[in-house]
Image (cartoon, rainbow, N blue to C red; front, side, top):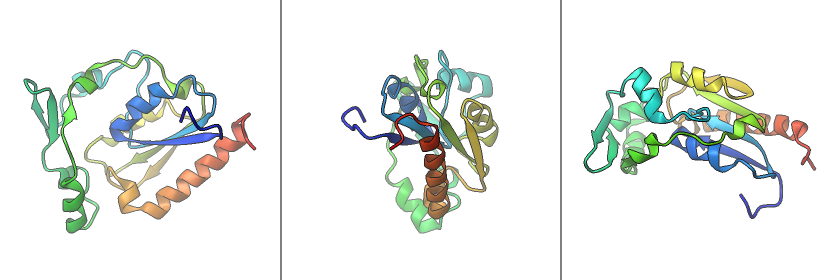
Amino acid sequence: VRSITEPVVVVAHSYGGLPTTQALCGLDNVIGVVYIAAWVLDVGQSVADLAGEHGLPDWWDVHPSEGYMDALHPEEVFYHDLPPERAAEHSGRLTHQSLDSAAHPLRDAIWKSVPTSYILCEQDRALPPSIQQSMSEHTTTTTRFDAGHNPFLSRPAAVAAQIRQDIAVFLTQSVLAP
């Protein structure tokens, strides 16, 4: 993103919301962020803080001595609204998630300086809709999808249309608009 001179809209999903929220701060060409079932925390918060408030999800298979967690039953948690063969295919691509990544509090938040939108997934079994609702309050707008954790897999045309709509709004609000 730093080497791109044109206006940029970034789309962040799930855990990707955390590094996106912090890493984009100070980049003048970012005109908006679309979060999809993503972690959108406030400065000073960490995933561990929220896990402490809400309890660890029952699908986390935590390995503290090794420093990672895995998803138990990912086909049911992440991909339940896909055909079984596609759910199995995507589940097979998953790797370990670092526990350290959940421990660090956010130091800055892009949503404080650029327009943002949130696609809240009402059938999400990985990131509960109630937690998404709370985090979406940091964003400019929220759109609700009747979908699981990966709506870009289960409803790609609808997600693409929403992203295009959000980009159009971001462009009207940006001083970088062409």
